[in-house]
Image 1 (cartoon, rainbow, N blue to C red):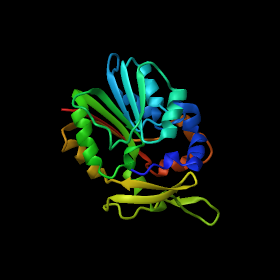
Image 2: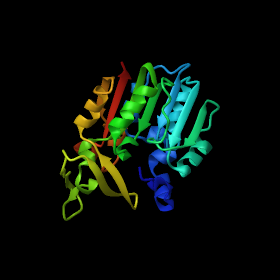
Image 3: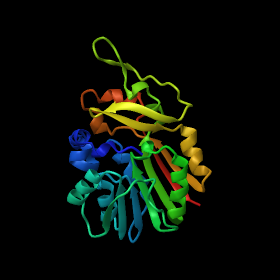
Image 4: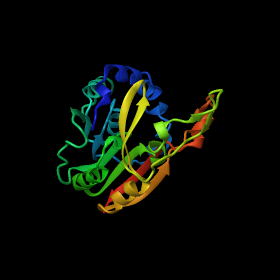
Length: 242
């Protein structure tokens, strides 16, 4: 997994995003994602790709007694420790693929907008299943396959700069996608919907929720946001260990 987030230019641009400055309330998917969390009082939670630690702080506020936030980016972990430090939370510089995933350690595993950087996503599903306690919950938000299959992950624009349509190509060919994001070249991994959902089912999970993220009504009143309804950008999934 390549780490763009320790690139100084990229990190500064990321810090200027609304979700970076204002936290979960500024994340368009949060009104849907928050409803997927089970009761967490007295529970243990692992956050894969924790970023600034917003979700770690949320689960701690919900009563989780042990929280581990992992991120490959040293800069992200430093920021998480500044913004979202709580006694229940440990932050660790560690890649999603490198974590040891001790057997039956966690009640809940969460990952927000990180798994589309992972090449072998099924391997992570296997490891998450191993590290969850019986009946444990896996909640994640990943870039939608229609989005990762987008050509350059951008609209086709008219001569006046108005978005016309969202192009999709090589949908059934998984693997590396290179795009330009926040002023930097970024490498992501495209996974089809079949890979994601069957990858969970084939590795001992039962699906409880599959939703496509849709901006809340208040965000849709912002000029230009109507275009967001024309493309699915994120896929939200809740799965439970059988």
